[in-house]
Image (cartoon, rainbow, N blue to C red; front, top):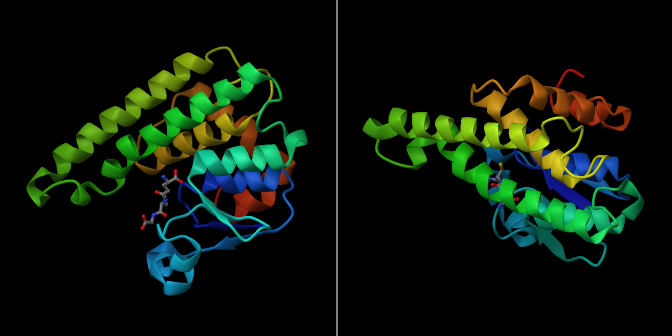
Length: 204
Ligand SMILES: N[C@@H](CCC(=O)N[C@@H](CS)C(=O)NCC(=O)O)C(=O)O
């Protein structure tokens, strides 16, 4: 399998899942800033021009973070990324769906306010987005209060998506609450992730 990713992008959740699961195959970097997401070669792989994209051994390409996380978890069930019990699976999908909605809604206007309105409105667009980022963090904080992981008592794909949100909050200048930093530290201190995180510029 080949997982296409880009540094400091939302593909981090899928990349961590790929590495944690010990997925056979390789991770390939696409430099979105240099336009590599829009080359004919990459568009032939993922016509959306986005990362993450997972090329399966069958040659088919799977896109969208929740689908990729589900696939990686199911392909390597012993990873625990997708729980084996039914309610656990549903709860993980509940989190992945929620994150997939709130990441673009809160973070895209915070990263790129110019894409969402005229120049004169940029600072108000950004301020509104930062407020939403704060609300997203508050919700996660309440939901995982007193717990080590979002679903059950071990790490699942939901935690990787949440760790991405914690990371993105830092990127846009919103300090995540201590409990979310601790939750992310629990994940980022997993030895198997050390090389990936170092390459991504995270001190672990
Ligand atoms: N809905 C997709 C969104 C993926 C996404 O927005 N990827 C960004 C990186 S953060 C991207 O590839 N942007 C390049 C582009 O849209 O041209 C998912 O959940 O995986």
